[in-house]
Image: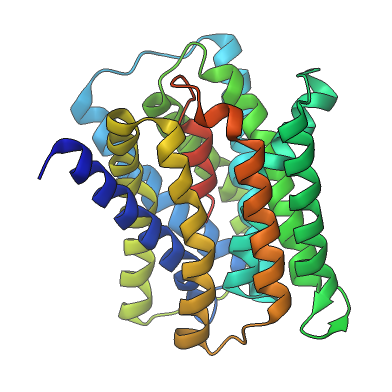
Length: 308
């Protein structure tokens, strides 16, 4: 098998793994409280990345400006994103989580226009409208009736927090590799999560399971799905390009939809399928310019996936 074919198979595998990770996260909420689960899982990822960094011995100390940007990425991309994500997932479904988070690139594009004055092209405008319509359908239509789930609202906040963190990451990728940004931002984010986990425990709301299987599944989610999969993703991007690789980001939401139905018994609604198609169509249209560019950074795509 050629390297390119191997890369495509690897990217497909990672996409399937990330789709399953949404469902695993929803399942783990039966055993752990949202903030503890977030803290424990991201800590496992951080330990894994820290060990890899020690072995690599190729990381330099970030500059003062880079630490500030890393702090912003950690606060929004890990602390706020993870708290809202798991709190929302508890009252929503894995499918809705995957479909709402999929809009993060569009939300980032809108924020870039507002705060960084990045030009809003026609494809980006059309893509944003499609994706916004998709999120309205997913969040505003519960099955066949109108209504807004508090879980979906929290998931929208999680998506917005992730989108804000991507603005900080955009500045970091000018001077740091995706590898370094991932390691520093993840470790810093896990440190920031500690006070939140302590607060949950002090309020008596922390739930910690003693079932070995639950801890094993959490370890697999943190180390394999969030840690190792990131390196596999980067390998695929380096071989076939970020534009082609980004197309695989359309797979996880529908894996979460199907697996959530068969594994967790979540209902599949027409509104989810319609909203999902609109969101992913919007992302595809908005990224048409990026898909033609060989210099698109994979960090944002991987960061979206690691928010699962």
